[in-house]
Length: 133
Image: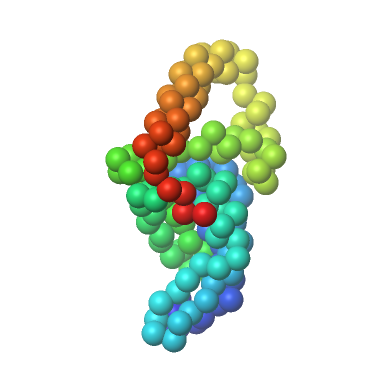
């Protein structure tokens, strides 16, 4: 139960992200105080490339809102490039209007980070890890 209630839907928000998108989830309670995420979870898990061994911490913020922190199998916090992508439902239009100087300075770092993420994904695939879905 959440504050004495058993809501049918909750919202997830990715902690620390610039993304303002809230992910709608259906929930089911088993009568023993356990809550399970239902429809909406699979889409969230795929969008965040969650895999077996990843660790998620949920914090209930009230009013059916949860903040979720995601960690990979090395317990490093996971960050996502889509945080600044307006196509994911984010309203981060202000971020896109930053000065060109900021983008030029961070451009090299982002390319390197993207290469590291791609290499990490390839290593995971080669290691035979199984996806949750």
